[in-house]
Image 1 (spheres, rainbow, N blue to C red):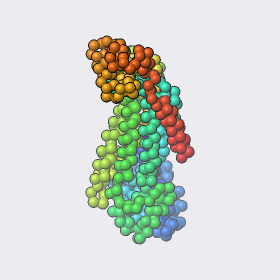
Image 2 (tube, rainbow, N blue to C red):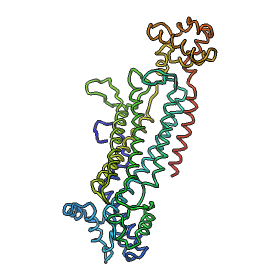
Image 3 (cartoon, helix red, strand yellow):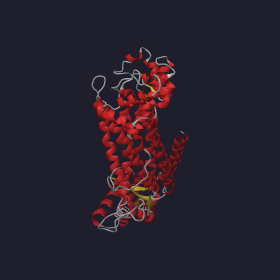
Image 4 (cartoon, one colour):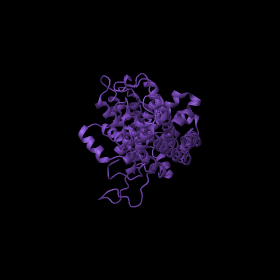
Length: 451
């Protein structure tokens, strides 16, 4: 994120992949693969390939010539092709970019960059999952109020929250792996997707380029097909939504009124220029903001699919912008999520105190079900409801009201009521779910690491 007040985190290396120099080199790599594939099929002389491959390296080129060409032509790749052709010895330069059009090279090269970015994302997620696994295990029995509609519902544990995060993130990993065969595809359809410039060998040439780039060939290499790129940004939007939800939860639970967790606040961090006591949730806020910015790019990616006829540069610019911004923001966001989870402090004593804020009302479900075993659910619901509403409106003790309720008193002893009011005894399968998701997280992370 570019905001200078954001919490500083290490750059995961994505920004450097989206420099113009990195893009140019990726395009040059595609030009080499194209030359090799065409030479294999006798479309260009085989002896031209070693020279093209040897010279298709940006440091060997005259940057001033390229920049001057860009100003002259206002074209993204022609000056680069000119320069590669110029520095090739003999007549090898004559066969650079043979039969291809700009988007063939640019889109395929940009997908090479996206593939590198994709691998970084997966490694970041693996690191997050390992931290979440530890956190889930550590907090699986740590009881706190489960809240629905902003109100105390039933007791839960913090580990359950983390387990739920893990479950969702692991599905994003499935989505990222699932999109790989759809997104990392070579586009080589020529000017309008007809492949006419390749003299009947278009599909074979495209397959050859895919082989050399370790990608997949497009069945219909149309420049108007953009669903695969839009799908990728949509997946990043889903991942961002999960991260934003986590950031928002930590942000809320860090408020003094809750006090159940605190994100890492490194020594020397200043929360306010005028209020020296402030320990602001900067990481959480950065994550929430990045999440919103990434999600906002999903409609732009979908809009880029609205292509006219056989090509439209405006739409190419849309998906290029959406991809670059979404990837940079996602990398920064995931770095912050990792820092947040790894450094999160939890306060079980405060969680326990918060469980008691309602004076036992949070145990209404447990009481109803226990009483319902004797008299039926609806009658039990009515009895517990009457006591609960009286406690909420009169300030009288819920336990005392239960003890003198005729229906309750007829079927429960005071000792049974007291036992049923213990919130730590009613966390259900929270610990089991958290433990299982910790195992799941480590397994997914290990698969990512194994490639």
